[in-house]
Image 1 (tube, rainbow, N blue to C red):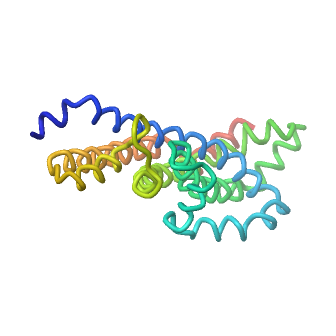
Image 2: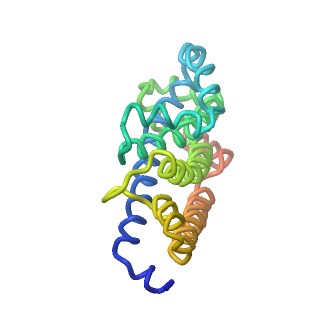
Image 3: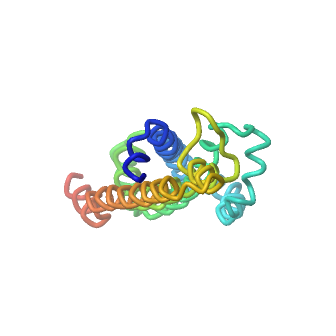
Length: 220
């Protein structure tokens, strides 16, 4: 029975639906979180206006806000994607803001002394120096993305083409189809392991702050 489940096109379609939501939501949260995180880390007014809301929403359990997403987006794949973005966003923005704050003022002053534009400071100094923090945020967000997708499918999941692995688990439980349930659980676990390995490799490939600062200082 287990090989038959793994050979089922519907089962792999559900796997694709879940993983697509994970990576799409992670990409959206990464871009938005990086932009907003840099703003929070470098602009004091933005930090004061948003820090309370960021902290409060970051601490909010996913299951508490899922009904709101269901009301906004309905029981559709859009609700799942929105939940994944919400789950990932705050991990990225908090780490990126910490990285933007950690850039030594000396490097900012060197850039200004060479009449560097704000864009050159952003792309030549702030973002490269924040790479370890950015990768740390991405690593945390990747795990939350998978959790968010599965939880969203359990609570606000949809049938048909947009069904995912959690929907397969629910349906298998109703039908007492144990092999199909275990196959979905195994694939979720394998996806989590692969994402952990990928993000760990990216984190190890990131430059250390000290090495970047030494390189930047020597270049100047």
